[in-house]
Length: 579
Image (cartoon, rainbow, N blue to C red; front, side, top):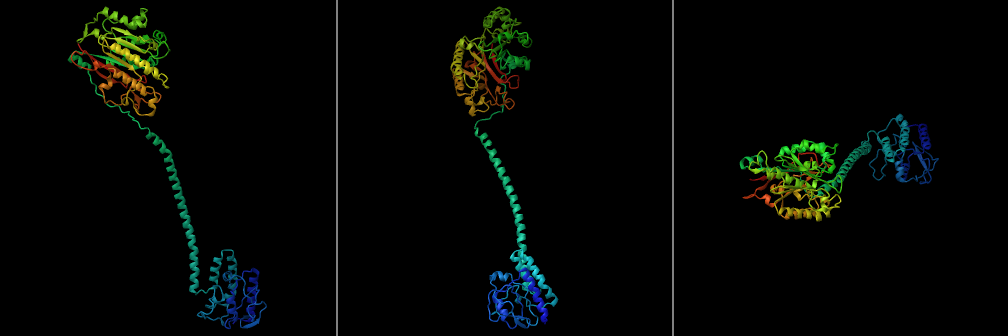
C-alpha cells in the first residue's frame, strides 16, 4: 500500500501537469458515478473544471481515505464522444484495492484508456510513477495529429503488455494506417501508370489526329478518278525496208516529223540530231514545226543557219514557211532528199532571187530538166521520179490562215504530203473558236480538194490528244479546259477523220498504250512518261489498203521517244512504193 503522502504528491504532480496543459481526458458521467460510489475501488480523478453537482456524496476516495472534495464532483459537460476520446490515463488503481471482476455485465463497459481498463497485472511503483508523464507527453504530442491517432496511442499506453486483445487492436490499426500508405503508393503508381496511359492515349490521339490530317490528302488523291497510264507497251516493227527491197524490189519512202520548239535553240543543244536521225532511218523527207524563224535569219552571218544545214543536211533541199503576222512565232520547214543531179529547193531559189512562194514552180521545172536521170533512172524497180516532188507550196492559198506560216505542201507523183502546225487554242482557250470552227474546217476542205487528184498525207503537230489512249491521265477534270484535250477539239478531229482519213499509228497499233510524243518540260513529265500524243500522220484510206494495183501503201508508223532536243519527239512513217 502506498503511503498517503506519496499518493498526495502523485496527485498534485499529475494535477499540475493536467492544469498546465489542459489536455486531460475526462471520464464519462456514468463511469465517474460508478467509480465514485463503488466501495471496492479507490481511484483519483483530477477534474479541473466541473460545473454541475451530480451526487449528495460529494466526496472522492483517495487510497483508503475519504476527504472532503475541494472541487465539487461534477459531470463533465463535454460531449460523450469527445470525452471518451480524450479520457486521461492518469487515473491509476491501488494494487490491494483493484478488483479484477470483469464479468459483471450489469456494469457499464469500460472505455479504452479509462481506469477500468488498467486492471491487468500490477506494475512497479517506479514504473507507475514515471508513466503518467510519458503518457501525458505522448497525448500532448499526439494532439497535434488527427484524433484517430490519439485514441490508438492512448490505448497502447494504458493497456497491459499481456493484454492480447488490446495489443491486437493497435496492431490492426497500425495495419490500417499502413494500408493507406500502400494504397497511396499504389495510387501513385496507378496514377503514374494512368498518366503514362494518358500520355500514351494522348500520343495515340495525336497519331490519330495526324492520320486524320493526312487522310484528306489521300482521299483527295483517290478522289481523282482517272487513268494514270505511264507504261509504254512494247511495239513490234511491222516493216523491214531492206527485206522489201531485196524480196519485192519495192522502195520504202520514209517521212520524219518533229516539233523542234525553236530551231535556233534546238541546233545549239542538238547540232547533230537531225543529221543522225536522217541517217538512222534513211529519211526521204524531214518535216519541222515551230521553227520560229524569219526569212532574214537563214542568211544572218551570226546565226549561220544556212551554213549549218548545208553542212549537216547537204543532201536535202529545204523549203521554209514563216510567220509574217507575228515574229518569232510558228513556222514550218520541209527537207527533201535530193535525187539525180541535185540542186533545186530554197537554196537555189534564194540564189536566183526568187521568193519562197515560187519554190514549187522551180522544183517542177528542175525535175523536168533532169528527166529523173541519175546513175540509174530507178532505185530498185521504182523510178526516181516518184521520189521527187513535182511541186512545193508554202501556203494553202487561204489568206486568213497563210500569214502564220503553218504549212508546207509537197506534191509527189503518187500523193500529196503536207507538213502542218495546227494552231494552239491557248492557255485560256482564247483561240478555241478560231481553231475548231475556222482553221480545222478550212484545212479539211483543202485536204479534200487535194484528195480529188491523189491520196493525201498530212502530218505534224496537230495539237490534239484524240482519246484516252493518247493521254496519260485521261479523265482528269482539268483536261476539258486544257488546250488539246477539250471536247471541242476532239470532236473537230473526229469530223476530220470521219471525212475519209485515218490516223496511221492508231490504225496500225490499235492497242498501243503509253506512246506519247509530247511532255511538259516545266512539270518534268518526260522521264515518268506523263505525256500526250499530239503528233500524227493522217492518211487517206486508200493509202492504208493493200491489194492489186496499189502502188503506194502505208506500212508502219511509230514514235521515237529517245530523241531529245525538244518537248516533242520525232515520229516516223514508212510507205512502200511499188513498181
